[in-house]
Length: 560
Ligand code: ARG
Image (spheres, rainbow, N blue to C red):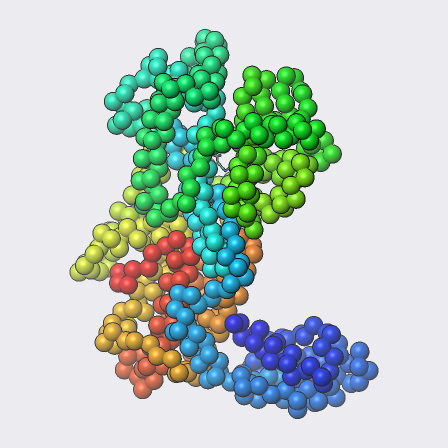
């Protein structure tokens, strides 16, 4: 529990009968510590009770008492509250030591389901930086859901359906090479796709062939289906190399194709509710009253589209998971799409659409420019991740050449650096991708947090594999910023979830590491009389940093 919250609660209890508790309690932090840790100005009460604020302050000061307060006094119109830091440190440290990784969790979600739509790369296309952001942000939000008592369901809505697959199959049948697809599936499939478009410029009838093949695919033609399935499997192999590097997994790989047989129902439902209108041969749901363009449901050639599949998806998720919330971690550029989906569902009378939330994010930039595929080479992302790992290895090798499992640690540090750089600022900001910045061990980085965490473990090892014990307080001025910050963890977990904002956890962890490193620079730990109390604090800091990293999807090695 937050210390301020503890104070407000303690004051609230003391005030109950004495004064009106109608007024929201104003608790301030005085700039001058001589005026206590918290101060309550009594002006608002004065107006209501028609007594002088000084008088009220006096009365309050004499009634308030609580085990967490060492002193309460009145100075003019203020009541000053002094905290019993010994008592508070005891409470905070005991909670961390007994709850470990569960510290900061709450049961608010009551185990209800939250579906999280994350990653969603497109088959036969490279895994983009945008998909990386969705994967990393979505995974952290899923962890936050769990920390707040919900059951997260991670769903990868693969882009594995649509007219482009008809075109791809045509291209493969005309110009494809089986071995190349096996060796470098995405490079080869992308080449075929690009060739198709070049050829179609000259021979537009190819487009009709593409449509025809997609129709075959939709109708379940075995040969087309087999090719599609093969492309999908090969692409997934590549994607899963990336997911393994990131250590992200999914509860369901329900891509767009999964909804192929669930589309008729959507069209029937919309038509029965009188929402479908014809427009130039296509079927749409008009959204004029919201001043938005219509939502296209079925093209003039009878094919369904992305939006139709997302409508089917929403219905399927509600039916199967009866979600408390359904989250979509998808880039800014799809804001209109999700608005339209929600409005169509709303017009169809599904009031649960209000529980569907689009969680947008910005772009990944390098030197201010969109990070895109390097010329002539396709698999950028996997290379980028591997490069981060290689660079991390070099740094670790320099800093700690005798470290035992250098390769494993380099993997954790390199990948952690990429993830942290993505999550440390609010998601709608663009991310400036820089190896140099993300791997700076002294900067606001993942490696800095991992290093601080490893430092804590190194201290505990040197103390003979120290084991923490409850029942010990620590009353030292240098320790207070850490204790006070540790006490706020649960509050931050709630806020980060409410705002779907992992950067709150990243910031919190950076502050905690900074407070701890300040303490470490000033205070001797191993050869001090207060050794065990200080080591309890070290243990608590390590535990909470590790938990922050875990929520963000980053590993916390114990030595590095
Ligand atoms: N495949 C899509 C893309 O790359 C992302 C899927 C997002 N999820 C969804 N339910 N529409 O843009």
